[in-house]
Image (cartoon, rainbow, N blue to C red; front, side, top):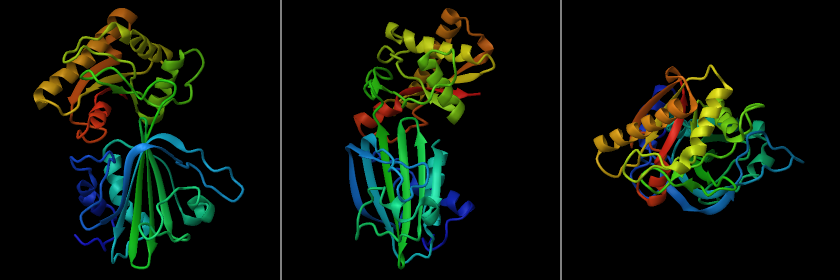
Length: 323
């Protein structure tokens, strides 16, 4: 399919698989589609990158950079007539299909023009060229990861910069023991959900209401099986507190693994771990059985590829999904 076509409607869906990251060492959730030239690639490495969620005009305080693991890639589309927003439709569709939520988007003058563009540390020419009157910006998130998509035009060439920031939640490390024995990602803190709920429970409830899903930190399983270790008690209590804070809430506990080992074994392991958490909620905290389901999807819903230890650690996790 020619990249000169504007990616509209069903065309974006048809192209979506081309944007999914292949099983390589990249941490980025999307990769350059066929026909695009990668002009810049950097990271992942410790760093910081701002992710605006509002216009930036003259005199405004620039958005504070988010700190964490940062990775950036720039793609060039030669001989294209696509507008900047159209250049982003493929990766936007792919990210939405993976569960990313869009936080903000804008175009050129609506973003703030010159001031917005220079609030972003974009790659410079010739790898990335920007027309200050012709660009499009989208910010997305899933759990502790933020993704920035930025597209512009220069003559007959189109440019897309993709930047991923895996934030480091203070004060705890980015992972706690869990999964297959190495780590379960910890979500970035969000605003409290309301008075009366314990702080962690309020954080979970706020994230669940906002996104329809939330990562459950602090769950520690015995290596290779579904035994929930005693150090997980505070996380179970926080989940119970979240359910008690909203008596009408019904959730699904979803277990995830990395891709190490066989598919059927990982599906069974992820399901038994979710069921173990549900059992503790019912037995130790009196949560009604009808309010909580348990499911396991094994390695079938990864946050990223499974090519490195860090990537596999991100994929091993427990999520709470709003039912």
